[in-house]
Amino acid sequence: MLLDIKNLHVKYGNVEALHGIDVEVEEGEIVTLLGANGAGKTTTLNAISGLVNVTKGEIVFSGEALHKLPAHKVVTRKITQSPEGRRVFGVLTVQENLNLGAFTSKNKERVAKSLEWIYELFPRLAERRTQLAGTLSGGEQQMLAIGRALMSNPKLLLLDEPSLGLAPVLVNQIFKTVRQINQAGVTVMLVEQNARMALKLAHRGYVMEVGKIVMADSAQALLKNPDVLQAYLGGAE
Image 1 (cartoon, helix red, strand yellow):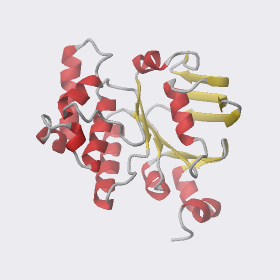
Image 2 (cartoon, one colour):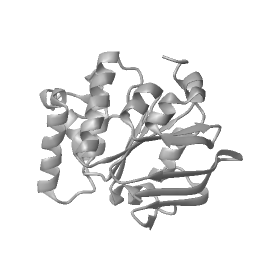
Image 3 (cartoon, rainbow, N blue to C red):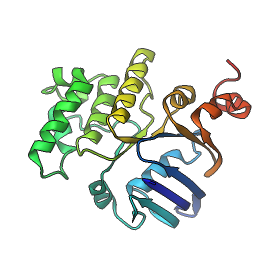
């Protein structure tokens, strides 16, 4: 088991956002978290990354307990996150943003190989490597956010709403690239508003409602589940 989350509770002040969830991710999988806004999906990713405090429960990654580690320690364990809203550094160039993603790596040869791979995945970024990130289109900024997260050669990539605000043609391109990333050996945990596309890409999925896991199954089974169809996929096709 690459990632094992047990009985995870997270609070914001006096409000509990996660009510004891259990999530498992095997090495090499794409696992998606589905649910409405406020269900706790982003909180789950942020708990894994060490960005929010765990009040109860465990997060174990490659046999090591993560839930007591601060965020700057978690990222050295080969876990990276591409956040909702991209959050690129607009006053820095594409190349500078990518270099920041490799700040934990002291192996210059490994960093150079990562950079080469990212430019292969996203040729648009290679064309714009000296351009300020703030002048990129939304789709290009999303490519940059994912590329930056890949620079440290992660075992687990956390993707939060990669299709948000993008045109359909760009969404298809991003999802195709996520599949390539996974096929290259990176395990992916995906939070995505487009439930149908997420389930077509993923191996397994979890459905969250108000801080709880209410359903867990293979992606194919969830695509055919009448409750999931009705709630998240707009009814039967």
